[in-house]
Amino acid sequence: MAGKAPAKKAVKKSPKKSAKKPVKKSVKKSAKKSAPVSFAKDIKPLFNATDVSHMKPMGVLLHNYSYMSDAAGGHAHAEAVKSKVQSGEMPPGAPWPASKVNLFIKWMTDGYKP
Image 1: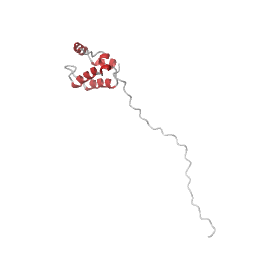
Image 2: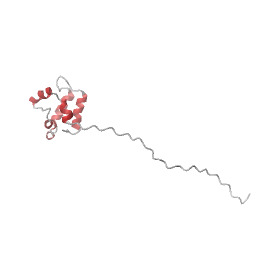
Image 3: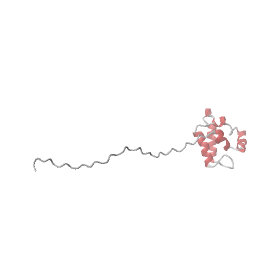
């Protein structure tokens, strides 16, 4: 049949899509940052009265923030104490567990907070 237009293919129309609601992504909250370690609250209590009195005659002032933080001296006092507690030489007779040593190191890496 000449002159007839070819039949059009039926095009399926998909139903109108409703506006998508934004999908809430579960965002994990980052782990709480621990508060900086402070000398007064965290470090000073690590040294008992025996430790303090034992070291004082040698000029080591374990209970004194200015002495222990000593920025002008390159934090040498804190470094020396860290070395001794890491090796187990200090305190004598009762070496610190790793948790205490790590707390002392964290005080140093947190910036020697008072």
